[in-house]
Image 1 (cartoon, rainbow, N blue to C red):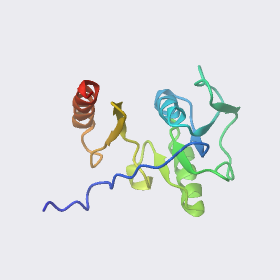
Image 2: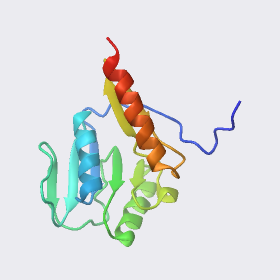
Image 3: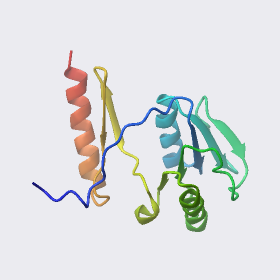
Length: 150
């Protein structure tokens, strides 16, 4: 059997009504917000500017501050500021909140998958963090298969 320690363990959780705090409002943050909203999460976006908050998200028009992750089920740090992302990761660690830090996989405790749905099924695809093109190709192939299922 292959040694799987370098890989991430897939786990699927019920996000309905659970708070997901996303710090940042760029393309990555907004894409992740949309996915979390589609699974029923209560999404809080914290960013001084946001072109188009996804419908259903609560946008707090300000910068991140310590304490913003209180009562969060999970967090995403996806700003273009390395220091802010690091601080979000640290707060999440202190609070035992799973966090995805977009620019530092070593600071992440969960990894945002490429989500594939169809035929009443959900699949998530991640790599070891070193091959995003392969992950995207696998997700496209899985989506095609799921769409063909009765």
